[in-house]
Length: 131
Image 1: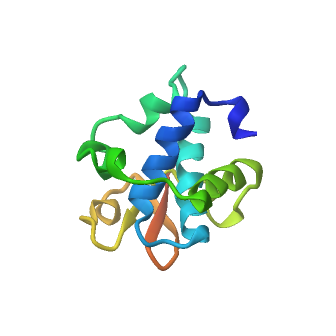
Image 2: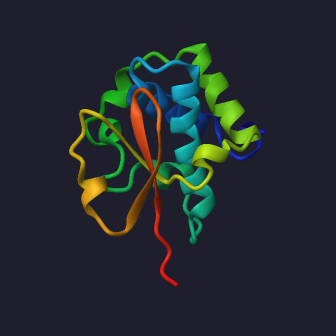
């Protein structure tokens, strides 16, 4: 389970980021955000911790502005993280980026990302691998 791969502090931070980034998302929206965070962790080529992944510069708006620290984590956010860790969402299994519809759409103007899925709240992208 996710608890075997995180400390209590890391689990809490991941949940806070999901809660803050998810805003008004339902459970499925939060699962999608959790999946991106897990995908980034799994794609990491170095010994990065969960905290390293979440605090990289210019990655998660709610970490950059500190709002993730001010949210109250709901039970469905914890469930979303647990579910995303245990089950592979085929629609976004390769997604390592997402943006809300309110965010600057730099994701769409780069040649390093490919849009692969959108839910009601976010658009999801995967990195294009050079051959």
